[in-house]
Length: 118
Image (cartoon, rainbow, N blue to C red):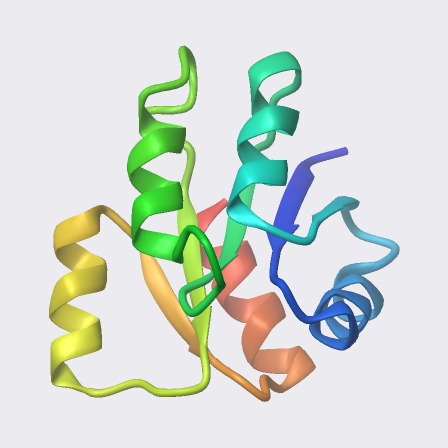
């Protein structure tokens, strides 16, 4: 079963993502970029769903640090964010994200993007 790491500082968003993806994937939750990095130092994931706007370390910085972890360079990352505009799309692509899902997300859209990039 494919493992998806979901990183978001909002517990409700984590709960919604877990429910949306339940059944088809093993879901691991992290409440911060720091927690995600700690997890990935000892474990792997097949995909990462990563919130952009988080305190301490935002999604862009988190992704940069994740890419430095051995074996994590090619893992697909989909950013989760409430605000999507051309600047966010450009910055996300430059950072190496495969896609963006706008929050609040629809289960069908999230599943489609996950399946597309896995």
